Length: 570
Ligand code: ATP
Ligand code: MG
Image (tube, rainbow, N blue to C red):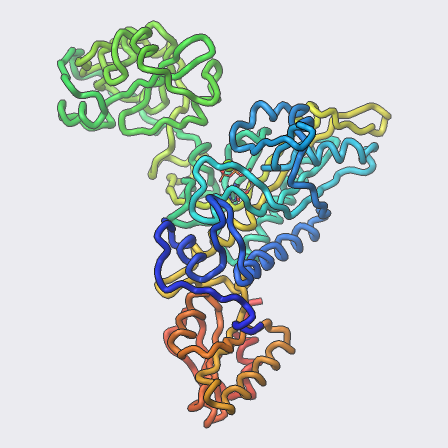
């Protein structure tokens, strides 16, 4: 392809509203343009990347036995009412009515539509298992669209849905899809990790996310430094360090702590480390407020807490008036001692001795508090309430946990019968009995991957595409061809030769200065570059440079093709 036909629109300056490298570079390289918040147009160069990603995803899915369908973006409300999600989904679901006042939504995901299709089309267990996928545009009215296409409102997803008569079959397909995703992300050339995940509001029990590791990732993932354990922090179990709680050494005291309402303020004022303080948070429960007690230096994990029986889901902190009515104090002076509401203590908080906590009296804290001596622990529920931290023991017993940031690019779930039961999707089994289908669902954020790849692979000069998804693998850059017939002819000939060989080259045929062309080819991240200039042509050679090489090398003109093939990865 010729650059002049590509609408190559690179920007010299960093766009003001882009917070992270990938968003900046996608705009600067002219891959995308913003139309509205979280809504983008893909320019020719960017779309080539998307198509490359889609091709790899399609190939691997087809190879794993999944078949492509294409479902509509617009979905009727009836289906969502049947599954119960019309009311549950919240404001991410963009709802509207047609001219007859019939309610519709823009599909954020397609469980309802596919379940409706399969319940109509599939009659017998003999047609199963079945795995159907699509590559399609989703709309989610994200509360905070940001980072360009990484958290967009309109984006392309590959979503697959599998159907089974029994659990073993679902698990088999789930494992196959796990392996299929692993191959996809390997082929994409990205540093990624599959991690245990929470299944969010899609439903179901078992779920894994695939994360591209990058500092700008919105998710925190934890993995063992010695074993295989890897999980999203949302879901990683915090096991208490196996240790006996120290015997009480200090006396229980009530101390005045005027103005100290936070853990920081209290620990500074009293000169104790935050890990020796306990914080108490009141959350809504099914029968009134519940107190959650954690170490001052730990962070509440809302997903784990919301799953505890009796705690309201989603987790909600109660308002200040309710706190005061339940405890007699403001939320900055709470502690587990003397509370009459249910108390749930985090595993690690239950191990602290001689701790500091609020006195349930404004402006006062207690010091030298001890479980059992001062307040019985056995009557209290102990649970895993906190986020894991770097250095925590790994839940599988192998080594300790390390934390890294990740960008979620894929998510696989075992849904079980969540949708098929609500929507009555059944088949007849061998004995002729109606059986409710089991389902799995498997998503990949196609457009998010383009951003995630840049986030992981860039340098000061621009994007460094993994070869597998680069918009072009090789750029042919003639120098001053508009003034030199020989250069133009040589570049055209090389371009034709590379095209014929199926190398899909980009010919930078603009009448630009060499410096501008070099900068642009680096910015848009083409992995291999061949420069055709007057000087090297005199030696019947051209100059090659890999995107991250520090120097160019001379290559005889008749050896270019073999030279490039040797350097290509796939
Ligand atoms: P997140 O936690 O990032 O919101 P999710 O759990 O809502 O993701 P899924 O419903 O599992 O995502 O969707 C499947 C895939 O679609 C995700 O793994 C992600 O790669 C992609 N995706 C989800 N939301 C967006 C978005 N707003 N913009 C771009 N891609 C998205
Ligand atoms: Mg989401």
